[in-house]
Every structure is written in structure tokens, then in C-alpha cells.
Image 1 (cartoon, rainbow, N blue to C red):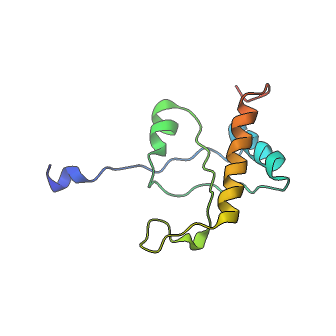
Image 2 (cartoon, helix red, strand yellow):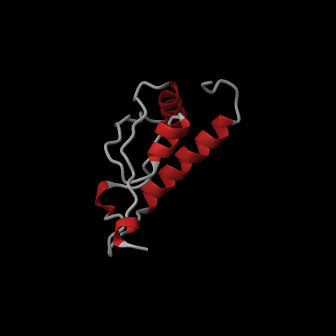
Length: 105
């Protein structure tokens, strides 16, 4: 492999904040967590989200389950129990709600 082939370009992509699936995910997490959930548009291309959004045409909703100071992917990366637990609860609620009627088409 040459150095030119060692890097993969992952273009930035975004699902609109008012997309029905984004609003569905917000409502699901609010039910599961019992509190308001903010929608903050993503702003980077470090993950292969463009495959879903731009190539497959499906919405992508990013659900954080950590916090800004976790130093993700650094040598001193860490995970706090409370945000991790909240993220698991949010994801569990969304998986549950996916099995219920009323998901966006």
C-alpha cells in the first residue's frame, strides 16, 4: 500500500435538524430520559456518515454518549459512568420505540 492509499476521505454530511427521524429520535430520548434533549447539528466528517446520508439516502442521527472533556481517542481517554448510563438508556429507548407503531416512514 502506498501512502496515497493509506488515507480514506470521509466527506462531511448532515441530516437536517428538522428531519422527521431527527425529531422522532429527540422525542424518544426525551421520553426515556425524562428531560429535554437538544438537537445540535453535526459539523464534521470524521466518520463514514456520508455513506448513509449521501450514498444510501437514509438519515443519520448522531447520539453522543460522552462529554467534551473525555479526551476521546487520546492516551488519557476516559468514560464517566453517568453519561455512559444516560447514553445506554437513550439508545435502549430508541430501540424499544423502533418496535412500536408511529415511526417516520
